[in-house]
Length: 330
Image (cartoon, rainbow, N blue to C red; front, side, top):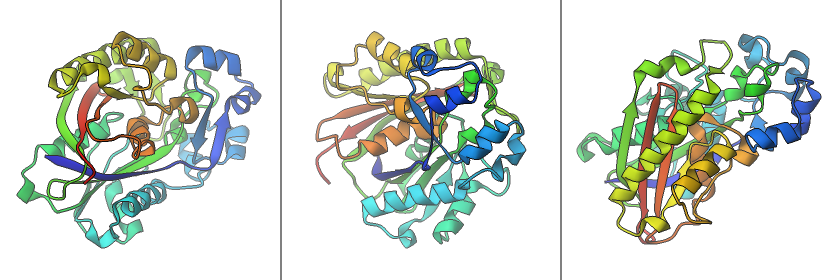
């Protein structure tokens, strides 16, 4: 059994709202954006003047235009998770990081985040684009208890806007930045328990979503969206079969790609009103941090007996789901 002891998140202060994008004169407007993706604003690690002046034409220069590094946002989210769990950095016995858009190929970003926090423990990256958080927890859920330390820090720093071409309205309207952190354990109980974890990949579709090194994000938007809807519905069907309670009571957190896609899924899957949790309208698509950020923001809203489906689809093409059960108030 894998327990989620706590979760934290961080979003940078700079905000890209629809008026900001409209003022970039790239052929978009608030009405155009809301009709297509339902996103009102996004947060970014980039300096807003840098975006206005350069439109991030050369992503290699985005480091100079960034307010925060991935290690800094990772540490901020981790500190929130530690505070919520009542733990110190010295309690962490392993650090795992993963991102769709890591700043470094070497060393592992987990090592840099651990250094920022003053943690001395095994640290490594485990990446699978947007479903990274599910893959990370599936990996840990599959391991023997004795092979793991008491507390493991799992961090997803997603500062995707460094890879966005702000001359391209199709991607400029979608993405925002966020970082999440979870403290998980196989030894220390928590009311949040991972009951089931499933992962899948179809590598033949790898070219549908790509971010070449130090270049702009590129995707086959319409095909990817149709695929994401279909796979999310399949994940929900599998998760409902594993539930203890009534499937009508399932809480749903999907990949925060765009609001209209999520609403389509929720309607087709017959997710009850008030059981669909999201933040994409306020944060945009935050890659691997999107869905876990929703869980972190709603951490105190779930109670005994609740069951949560967390379903994420992304590049690879890869997808996966978690069934999280809330058991008492441990």
